Image (cartoon, rainbow, N blue to C red; front, side):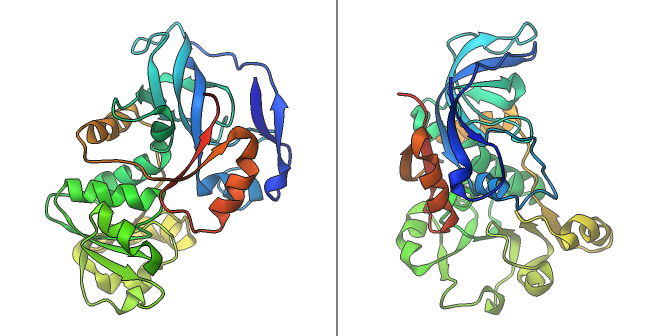
Length: 315
């Protein structure tokens, strides 16, 4: 099978196309013929070695966490899926990767593909969608009518977060560059803040959930924007969040939390339900062939992606 292999850490040119054997599955896994994947910032952060402290990959390795495709083999202990099922999901990127024509994946990390999405669209949903869902619902305890701020509302995670918050009839303030104002409004953002012309710290409002998707805000500097019983959630692991956060959260009414996204079939099924109900959609900024994955990484690193980048593995 064709796969994108990384033999060393470094710039995008360390990604190589290689021919490998199909992976063998365990009893609790399925083998998926992958039709599409996507490129997420975590992919190039791993490639560059920026996350070695939290995730050290055994080299050579395959990157990528999102998959959408069809099941071609089922393990002995798998009961939920059958050969031929169209699925999407997030694989454990610490163990294997999705930039390949075939992927062995735990059955618990998959769900049936949303009926209203193509394989390409479904492949852009798992990692970013799960991050948004788990940050807002599980960490933020989002409820109907809350006041939510999404810092980085025009990217993959941010765009899904906005839509999920609007599905709960929340009032959403979105932070992005001015050039993405129309896109943010189309997603449902009630108030768009252009970070280039207005500093978030200067805002006068308080929020039930402050979701820092970009990971460029410190809780200490924006805590005045968090309601007394509100939650600050960030995607960026930091010393303050990881080591001091748990102690802080024992005594303070305001909570600060970091989202470690978890592979979870129930959450994937919930995302699929939102999609099929017309409450959640993806926006694909650019689509790349598997052979052009290095170019996709380069574009992702610019920080100018609106929505998601898809990766076509097979027609």
